[in-house]
Image (cartoon, rainbow, N blue to C red; front, side, top):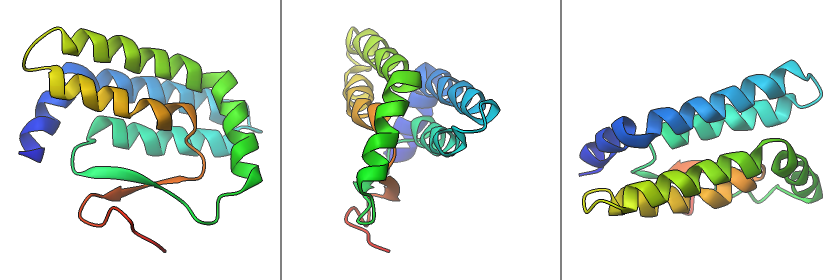
Length: 130
């Protein structure tokens, strides 16, 4: 079932959201000082491309630096990507088959706003630790 949902997701919105994250990542890499945010953007692009069967957990070693970095991310790219998730989620919820995908899109909004200090893990170990 996860594979079927991921394929439908990929066709309807996953590819576009992943491209958005990749563009944000490239912009962050070009600006040199924002390279950590670029790496986080590419990590989330993979998650946005194939989200079913994976989840995010808070890293235990994340601290004040992650919080401050998330504030910079929010201003530079996070807000725009979250708006993309909201628009796509609403559009998907307009159809019966798209409702679960729209809900999944809404669940991606928190990580699009605050990606640093989070880790993507398979759902068979949702409380994974290092």
